Image (cartoon, rainbow, N blue to C red; front, side, top):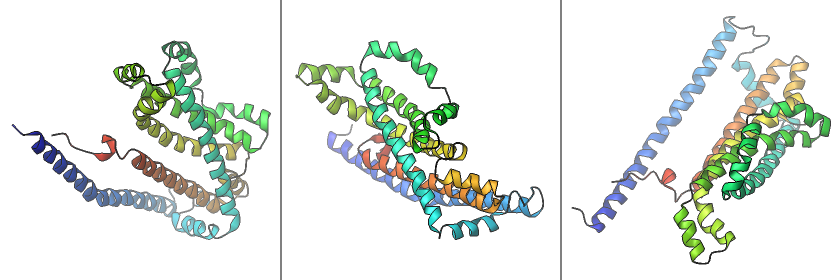
Amino acid sequence: MQSPGDQTVTRSVAAVQAKSRRRRYRPRRALLGLAGILTLLAIWEIAARVGLVDPRFLPPPSEVLPRLLEIATIAPFWIAVGDTLVQWGLGLAIALVLASVTGVVIGLSPFLRRATSSTVEFLRPVPSVALIPLAVLLFGVRIEASLLLIVYAAFWQIFIQVLYGVADVDKIAMDTGQSYGFSTWQRIRDIVFPTTLPYLMTGIRLAAAVALILAITAQLIIGTPGLGLEIARAQNAGLYTTMYALVLATGFLGVLINFGARFLERALLSWHHSVRGEIPV
């Protein structure tokens, strides 16, 4: 039977081995991801060249990628990217504050959780795009119209995760904190928040992607400034190569946002087992 000291050493060795395996497999995952992208581009190129699709309406990537590099050198492109990021970031920030506060308040109250469960289940499945007529009637083509859609969609992604996190809080820890005279704020800060944080970060990662989708959708349909509006203009003008170049730009933007969300998640949850990847022995 191992002594406590031996068990500690064994766990430390296991953690080092797990970290080494993750580092070893990262290049392999990166290569597999790159192979998938290259395969998709090759299929796209072949389909356009052999006539499986009309190259007038779906130009090959050998034409689209150079066009993307070309428009990336002009100011209007970056202005559109900036408008998209402003709407995305502002909508996500508003949703984060609203969902976090509301989720903690409702999650800590069994009465409120029961009283709001039917309302939540009724509103959550409503697609944000169904609110486009309301957004246009209220705000026209101003940025507020995009924010309405973004906040509504991102709110539910974060809110539901916060509810799960609060429900996972150890009741014994809460009772212990109360017996030691912790105030409500101290219990939220020292007990509820650490337990809820992994769920919250998952909600933020999901909401970040959804917020970008709704920002582009609002720009496409409503006409608020951004990449979506530029895509619609290119389509209406018959500039299909430019249109697909802008579509690829939105895809690259989504990848960068996802990487950023995962980096933030790893940085804030470095203490959590899901990030450390320790193997129990």
